[in-house]
Length: 118
Image 1 (cartoon, rainbow, N blue to C red):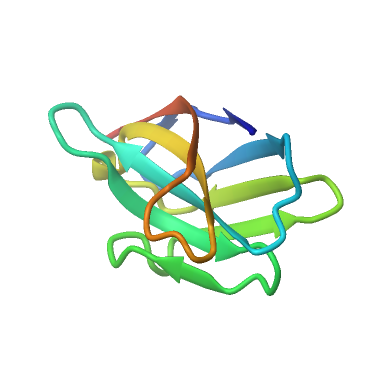
Image 2 (image 1 turned 180 degrees about the vertical axis):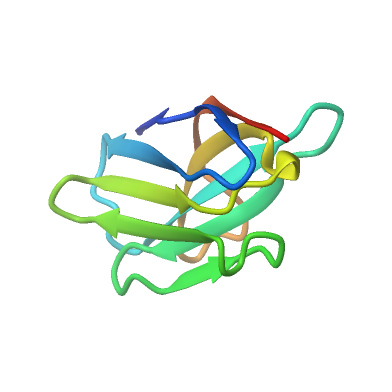
């Protein structure tokens, strides 16, 4: 399985940014795709996830109402639209995938840096 994240960059507070994750190597039926992030000196934390089959979503409280996760079955991509960015959103963002019945992430992508200047 390969998860290729892209779209990171340097933006100002209040701006928007869209991350994309290209997934390959297997069919993702009955999988949950997600995004995590890790800020300097902090542990990696959950941001959002989406079920591949039905598109059901779940978000961390810190990003609810600002971030939207989506998936495109035809393109095998998972996007994270980030609006109203804050300096505390600065982190390396990681794409992830897990089997629906798994409690932990089975596959990680490489990270993409998001830096929000205040």
